[in-house]
Every structure is written in C-alpha cells, then in structure tokens.
Amino acid sequence: MTQARQRSIQVIAHRGASEDAPEHTLAAYMKAIEDGADALECDVRLTADGHLVCVHDRRVNRTSNGRGAVSALELADLAALDFGSWKDSEESPDWRDPEFTSVLTLERLLELVADAGRPVQLAIETKHPTCWAGQVEERLVQLLRRFGLDAPPAHAPEESPVRIMSFSARSLHRIASAAPQLPTVYLMQFVSPRVRDGRLPAGAQIAGPGIRIVRNQPGYIARLHRAGRRVHVWTVNEPEDVDLCVRLGVDAIITNRPKQVLTQLGRT
Ligand code: G3P
Ligand code: CA
Image (cartoon, rainbow, N blue to C red; front, side, top):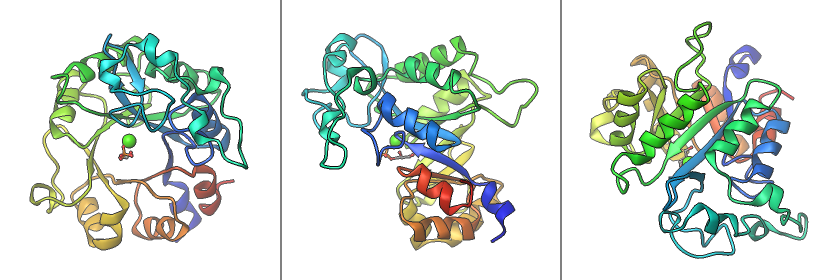
C-alpha cells in the first residue's frame, strides 16, 4: 500500500482520544486535536430540558458519579456530575478537573473545534432518535445552522466540516430532509439484506460498517466502493485491523487511539 493511499484515510477520534482520557469530555477532545486527528466523533442525546449533550449511554451511570437517564435529567443536573474520575487509574490518577471533565454540550464542542487553529471535522452520531420523535435531529440542525455548519462552504463543496451518523435510517432521513447538504453515514453492526448489494437506505450516503463486518466480509467493502459509497469503519483500535482497513482502501477509520493510528499510517 502506498503512502499516498494511507494519507487519504481520515482518522476520526472516537468519543475523543478516549483510550487516554475520559470519553466525551473536553479533555478527550483536546487530546485528540493535539494528537492530530482529522475529525472528532461524538454521540448526542437530548436532556430533559432540550440541550444536546455528548453522552454515549442512555444512562449516566457508567461514565459519571450520577445515576439516571440523560433524557430524564436537566443540563444543570448533569453539570453537577463528575464525568472524569471513573477513568482514573494508577497511570492517570487525576481526571477530576471540572473544567475539562464536566458534561460536554455539543455547543461547547463546536466552539472547541472552531478555536482549534486548524481544520477539524466532526462526525456526530444521533442516539435514541426514536424516543424524541425527531427533536434530536431538529435541535441538531438548528445548532449546526447557528454555527454555519449545516452545509459545506461554497468554496469547498466536497469538504463538509460535519457529517451525521446513525444506526437509525429514520434519523438519517430526517437529517437529509432538514439539511440535505450534510453528509450522512449509515452505521451497521451487520449486513442486513437491504444493504447487501451496496445500496443504503434513503437519506444515507456513506457506509459505516463495524470492524467485525470488515474482518468477516472484506469483500463487502469492495462492493460498497463499486456502488460509489465511501466507507467509514468503527471502532478500529488494533494495528492488524488498521492494516486490514488500509489494504481494503477504506475512507475513514474511527478509533479510540488516534495517535497510534496516525503513527501507523506514517502521519506523525
Ligand atoms: O462511530 C460509530 C460508533 O461510535 C458506533 O458505536 O456504540 O460506539 O456509538 P458506538
Ligand atoms: Ca458513537
């Protein structure tokens, strides 16, 4: 595989540099930017009072010192929680600074990216899109519009600074209706009959297979490429999986270890 081909693979930091820092915190995203990631992945959920926050799980129990569903808590409740110290270990014992480890709103993440000092893209995943009957997508497009990020810049129509990802075809369809210029990624845990031939559900443009699909059905990547689809693979942490993705010519690698992957691709 040539260096030129390797350079064309985008490296997307999954939940930030989430191997090194608590996922979805400012600390994790600042580290990913420092590491040189091309883009940042984040999951978004709506709080009870309608704020988009970056949290993966339905409940806050695993990644904070609180309990309960994000959708049942208000932003002020979440702001009182510690989203860092669950990550403490002997090597990194101190994830307690609330400035960097409090709940992260999507708005704050957009500000961070705007101030990054270099182009950094965002790959935003909508979670629980059915529970709020379209409100996640509506709020998301409103917020992106406020930052001028709901469409690619006129001078670079191929380079959208934001793409929206989801396992839900319905969610992507809503995004495509509200902001047709935003690229969308259909995430897959397995290859269902509706996508087997390389087609994707209406509203989806880019394919997002999990690494298990890539390992078990490598021919599927070529099928997607033949169908004109770009391919973003998640979550690719092991060096042999990075090699496999390079061999198959995937377009983006979503990883908890952006620094390690960039080094493996010869980009550091
Ligand atoms: O980037 C896609 C990947 O994040 C999907 O899985 O569970 O980590 O959101 P999950
Ligand atoms: Ca995700």
